[in-house]
Image (cartoon, rainbow, N blue to C red; front, side):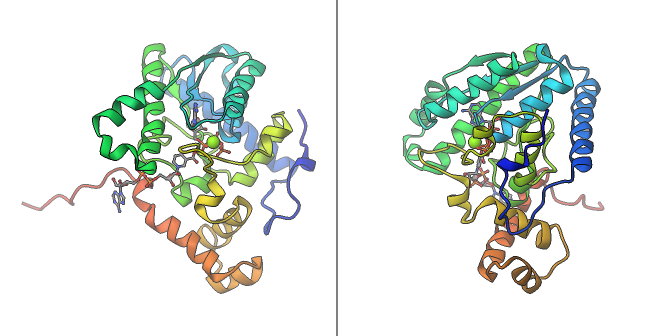
Length: 277
Ligand SMILES: Nc1ncnc2c1ncn2[C@@H]1O[C@H](COP(=O)(O)OP(=O)(O)OC[C@H]2O[C@@H]([n+]3cccc(C(=O)O)c3)[C@H](O)[C@@H]2O)[C@@H](O)[C@H]1O
Ligand SMILES: Nc1ncnc2c1ncn2[C@@H]1O[C@H](COP(=O)(O)OP(=O)(O)OP(=O)(O)O)[C@@H](O)[C@H]1O
Ligand SMILES: [Mg+2]
């Protein structure tokens, strides 16, 4: 195991990397968290989707450490919008970890949805969310059958920005890396031995060809993380944030907009307050 800081950026607007002691404490804390979730559920391990991206790769490495190789089942679920590189990276991760995994082509499943409502099939967001939600159904299909929990791969940056599909990739039993900003996920990934090319890979939801998280959100993750940490999670005002980070007010406004408009995604569906009848 090594803490390879050299693969990580030294030019982020705000350095959110943990100290060595903090990183190791966080690592141990997450391992214990995974074990506790599985034990509390009376489960015999966990299922997770492997995309070849850094969030699922890191979560898989942690889960193998926490639960043992034999108790993690990976699902690689390609569709026409996934690159071959990402899908082969996903298989490479499963093979390096030595876990059981299946490759499930989800295009035919998605097509049945598209055939049912052809008028929605060309809406790239609606269609992209179908791929994401189909994966959630398959994760639970396997988890139910094998008495396993479903591990989520959401991180803090995505959660606060609402950058996930409601009842899609967020339809999981727990999120082991859910309190880490993306920058810290990369740091932990390097620490647990994930290959450098995967640590530094461009994040993509792969809901349509060529999609990247940073282009869709309108800023890079280091900037998003910094504004979230100082202004959304932290106490700095908008003007203090712009001065501290050398970002524009428009960038801070954009992050606040992402955060506020996704509030509904971070709560269970509301019902009217009970009437005092
Ligand atoms: N105020 C409100 N109160 C209650 N519900 C509200 C609502 N506003 C919208 N809604 C509901 O939420 C729905 C929209 O939310 P949703 O269906 O999630 O869809 P939406 O947020 O439009 O799209 C998902 C976003 O997450 C990104 N994503 C998805 C999956 C994975 C990843 C990744 O990084 O891998 C990223 C994706 O690129 C896209 O930007 C609406 O159709 C409506 O049903
Ligand atoms: N083709 C796929 N096969 C299996 N699981 C997938 C696939 N695409 C997405 N997922 C699941 O959905 C999760 C959310 O995707 P997301 O893109 O946020 O994470 P990632 O791909 O692991 O990392 P990154 O955000 O850096 O791309 C993935 O971590 C993975 O669990
Ligand atoms: Mg991805």
